[in-house]
Length: 395
Ligand SMILES: NC(=O)c1ccc[n+]([C@@H]2O[C@H](COP(=O)([O-])OP(=O)(O)OC[C@H]3O[C@@H](n4cnc5c(N)ncnc54)[C@H](OP(=O)(O)O)[C@@H]3O)[C@@H](O)[C@H]2O)c1
Figure 1: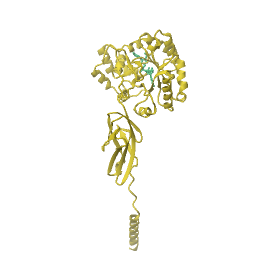
Figure 2: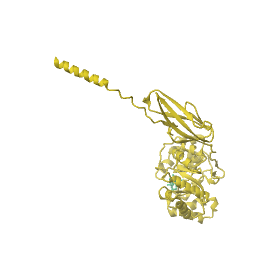
Figure 3: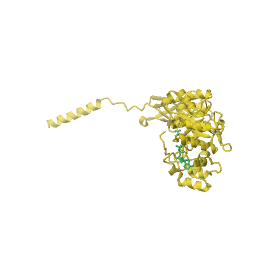
């Protein structure tokens, strides 16, 4: 009996001790606020808005933190207003900070985002008569041409010559393709006046971005056609802002007519554009029926920037599947054209410039012949339904 009483006393003492230990405070709410617009985080970052547009700001906090009250304050309500539901309106060109404060019990958690209001630019419009588009730099660029990726020296020379003979005037090359010299040689050897021809080349991250002035001069020397119509940064990378600024200077010096970017999507552009002075004239990205960039294209065009698509036929290794797609083949049959022509025309009708690659003079000719038919709205939407968000290259 004594033993049982002893055990009971020990248990009671243990319960007492536990109950006397001061309670730990409830788990602290997550102290970070995540501010999102269209599912993209802008916490302490700049969001660009077009004048006259409105967006909804979503505030994410720890769901376990209990009852909350959220307040929104704009530092410049004449430029950017915000109501207490988080609806932001871009009213006037300029910048404002939106401070967001969430009150949880007696605690306040705050964060902010910056809004830059920009004027809505006129989206570029294709002139189907002249087969050109006016760039924001003031120059006209042909809307269809030739891509030269993977064309080695002689093949490249022959392809550019075939393009120029067939009436094509737009050529896309790059330092990385190793064929700028062949492009330049074909242009110099042709009877087509230099000012009718439009050459795009690109400089590459790494050594070229580190010393962009040299990279630009090297491209001018290799091409040897007087000036470069358009130079692009090949893809984002270390020193890309520095490289772009060197292109801005070369454009101011008349060495390059227009400048732009390649493989920059919405997030990359939002981060990059506030750091540079000259809005790119062109963005060149992967675009084909299996990777359509339906959100990215209007975003870029609304900035007054022309969009150009690479891998229009999906790129080597994928062309058979894409050109053999039953929907595209049916549409091609209905118009008495080829699948390749349907894909190129679909691009043009959504405001995307095309640069199909080819080493075959017959294909080069065929790819320029895309102005004798028009896809119906129904055909455009049938192709739109083929999107698989299937990227065929890594950048
Ligand atoms: N900025 C970038 O990061 C980037 C990346 C990739 C490409 N690019 C640019 O975009 C251009 C286009 O891409 P790409 O050349 O790689 O791929 P693509 O244009 O999608 O496909 C080229 C392939 O399509 C075939 N082809 C062309 N016309 C045809 C036709 N009418 N009928 C049947 N087949 C046809 C070509 O074969 P044939 O030679 O037999 O005609 C070649 O094998 C490149 O040349 C390059 O200038 C840029």
